[in-house]
Image 1 (tube, rainbow, N blue to C red):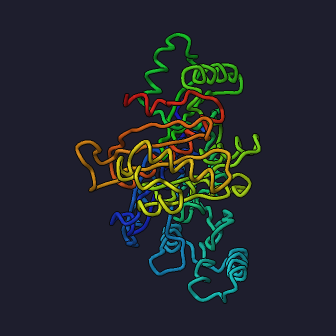
Image 2: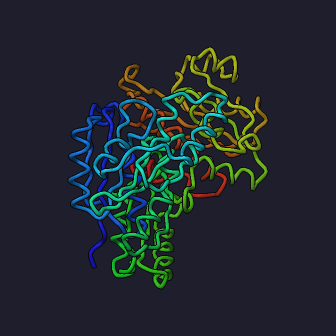
Amino acid sequence: MAIPQVALLLTGNELMSGDTVDSNSALIATHLGDAGLEVGEKCTVGDDPIKLHAALDRLTRSYPAVVINGGLGPTRDDLTSEVAADLAGRGLVQHPEALIHVENWCARRRITPNPANLKQAMLPEGCTLINNPLGSALGYAMDINNSLVLTTPGVPAELSAMLEELVQRLAAQMGGESRHILRLQTFGIGESSVEERVKQFGADWPDEVTLGFRAGMPQLELKLSVASEANRREQERARALLNQAFGDHILGEGDSRLAAQLQSVLRERGQSMTTAESCTGGLIASMMTREPGSSAVFGAGFVTYANTAKRDQLGVPEAVLAEHGAVSEPVVKAMLLGALSRSGADIGIAVSGIAGPDGGTDDKPVGTVWLAWGTPQDLRTHCTVVSGSRQLFQNIIAAAGIDLIRRHLLDLPPLPHYFLRQA
């Protein structure tokens, strides 16, 4: 049975120039796949009414449904409604529900609606609305050339909030067999390593379960997909095999996030943590406090970039800094002990490294970093080298710092795959 196909039409000069990277099509495709639908074609067009008209005309004659992303905003280059109405042979009218939505959106921000805001209430006659709980521009659905056309704004957060309703409409119109998907969030193990370990299962891996990936930073999402509820047992068997192979790298199911998982472990144990950061510039503390409820487990962190700050704020002896240098085991141990003492936290992480692009030596090349984590009674250290850009270095080390504390508290193997592979 062929999988029903949907076309995507993405609009905006910023997509054509490269000023904005298209992440929306991947988001839409993922949700469509969960509903047993797939993207048959993706077309990106700038803010040109003639080209938009031609692209939408062609796609609606080729596919039973088209999702338009972008072009619903308040500015003159937001052309979706004008083009869709013209192609359908309809006029643009002020939609009363859309008008109320725009007025309420403005009222919540204590602004008076101007003509640009009110433009978003001018929609093709006879369309049906798709709710946008975040933004001022509602989406809508209409028929063009016997194809179901659904429009969405280009702002990723708004699109994400609208996707459930959008996919429900598509599934109701086109059918499609929804698959049952178990999402696992992992950290510190890549797609190739997962594939290699899954191959080792051989005949033990259930044929009914399809393994998929969605790469991100800093996490990798694994998707265990089965065709129906009847295959749930096989799905759980696959989950158990993955847990057996690299369970210490699995953070949890659904939308589990690294920092949130660590917070949960700290709360369960009634403990708090601290950070002593040099090369990451406070990124570890930022990741932790980005999560709600962080005040219960995170009281203080220290950003001690200069040697004088390490000495004055954390009590790192000047003689140790002079003898071993800032990027060294003795220094990160002293940083951690100083942070634990001054913050009163139960556990912590300290990092000092060379983020680059300059500053490396033969003994300590760019990307070298020392980490110390744990408690005064159980303090552990590790040195590694992370190649890549400065930003990549900081993101990886910050995430690893959080993961090392998580591992420490859960009594997991202290050196994870991402460090062991470098040994």
